[in-house]
Length: 213
Image (cartoon, rainbow, N blue to C red; front, top):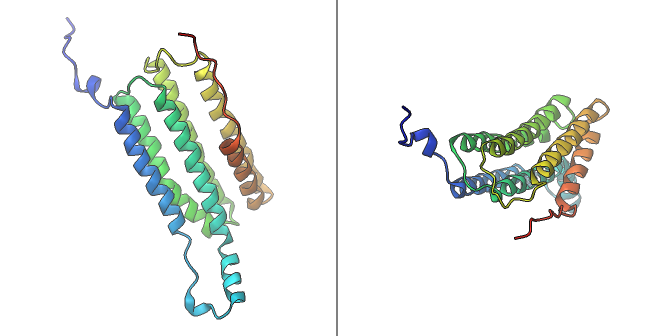
């Protein structure tokens, strides 16, 4: 006879609020760390406004990678929060999927710095793209698991699951296309990735047909 007493694994990690709070804090730290990699030019090397302009132009790769990573973090924070908003609760397995997702978020400052330092090298761009791919794969896995585990609210729009999965797959496909352009130039790759991010950041939101009450 199976006991009705709850086991630890059945009751652990159910708070969506705690997952959201941890995520907010970690995303904030990651967003701060990427800007800290942009260093003010050394005063000893600046003797005129022309010197300062040259020094600022030399920081262009870091400004570009900062913009790209800030957009990346904003897009994935929005994606995670969207999923959490439509869940009735979490469970231990879902919590660990989100921990893995946050571990990938914490790696983004590293992959950003690597790309800024070696912006001409394909390997640096590949590592950065791999970081984005892992983020997307874990976000997809999170929603797939939540759907199969019955953690989605009954009031969720009927086409919500399809819309979330389609958005992730399309975005990841475009990111992969951008990464593939490194065969031509890493700068072309970065340009396309930034354009994709800007599209997802400013594009009109999909309006879901909510069920009538």
